[in-house]
Image (cartoon, rainbow, N blue to C red; front, top):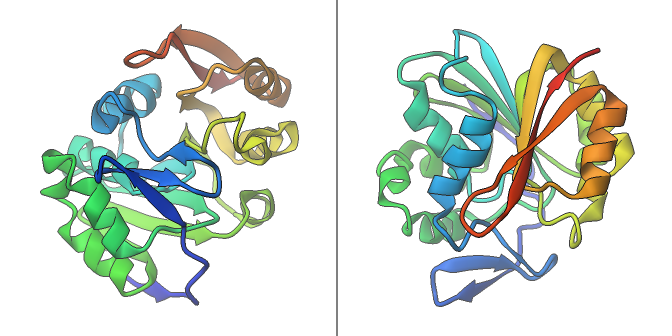
Length: 225
């Protein structure tokens, strides 16, 4: 399964120490300085109680695709369970930049070959092992409203709310809730007050938990209405 789209404007990057990609648009790194793969597992998998909840057809959705590291961590955790994974990304990274970034994580890099092949061909819908992947390109404030799916688990992984507040606004959090299955969950690395309040207003019971590495807190929640 492949679907080719017109290439979107790519992310523009600086590289810290030659290995850490920094978005020049948002002046923010793409993953944690304290091991991005460990952070993904702590925040997005652990925060959504995955892989324990995974069942065939389970739908994961994500705001902020970035390097695809969260997708690859999910692939490693999924085993043979067939899943659906939909991500919303406004400024996709070039395949060569993604490959360079993933070199910092040998475990993820080892399973990234098929993903990088599809990405280099501008495929934004493809099969990755047991996972049916779709990356929706464009401003999530527009594209999420048009999505006809509902997620069992959300990875909210935009750039810092202080740098990219548009991806954390109350209206968009309401769309996240509207596109969440009954009892569905979210997890995010940020515990910013306005983000938590927006998610609570949207119908999530929000919990603040211990963050990864140097971050004191993160947030998780479950849809209650």
